[in-house]
Image 1 (cartoon, rainbow, N blue to C red):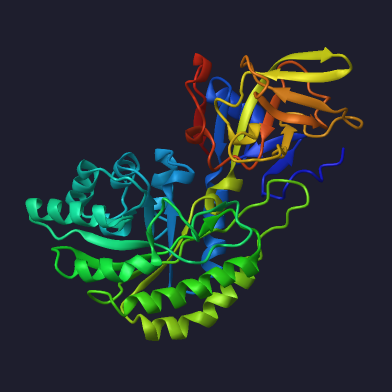
Image 2 (cartoon, rainbow, N blue to C red):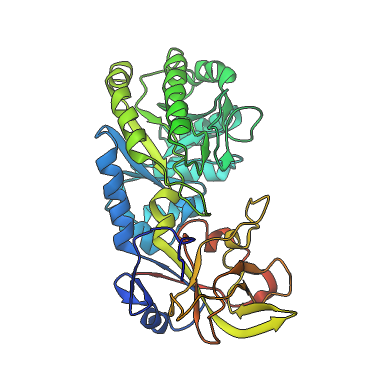
Length: 409
């Protein structure tokens, strides 16, 4: 069987069965107790962090963006590997504050923070990325009432974008951050408020596989930070460069050249240290750390033929894995890499089959016309590249089916 549609993610195959965390998938399914489930390989997560450490300059602090996968056990594991956490809600804040990560190494981002949420963040002592002048005034008021000086950065919407990114989060009108041209006035007002200025958060986009685009955005980010720092109420102590590092999902996509990105950052560091002598430089990554270390597993309930086409109906679906169904930002649906986990290679060439879930909607498709036709009832269908934006990015309550389980192995 030709497995060219599968990425080289580090998972082993033994006796024709996928191995997760050193355990055969069939045994792992028994341990889980039921399908569907997500499984995350902690060794692959650790290896990805080590790879980043080896490529990036020592001056770069590595933060994990919780929104990619907030599973508490995974967060606990990463607390001992990365330098900080970035959260996008007070719910995520609670998860990370239950870990060993110090509060001052946690930052909160996201538009539309309420007064109550800002008060919680100020009380917790985390760094708050301000997305508007309104948030600045509210957190200053909260700090005064609580008797603390909230730690804040300004999240900047720059006048440039991360080219070729899956999701662009800067350049032009955006709900994220403060337009760069408005930041100087905001910084002037900040000098009058009881808040502690930490620096800037400049996040341009995500899911980018082009090293040259990331390099250009990082160069522009440093230049913008230098200009804005001239009006800052104090020294820059934190400069979040964003992330944007992508992983390959679809045929023809190339792995990000991490060495090139790292080499460029090494070249930028001497000038950056001179310009920002007190700053921590942060790269914020989520998908790149955990995306390739996770799989989604469902079981074939029925093998069905309709007018010459084979359908594998499973107990999983878009309610657990919206992204794999193509309904999480894809314009033209593409297949995530998938395989029959307990029979990776058939005896001969596999026929094409479409994997669908049990939901009463034609949108519930996990794999369309892929070489999985050797699967039988009871077999395990595995969707690869599922460690990020999986369960918590899906409409789990849709049609009231049981929730998927999660395992860290």
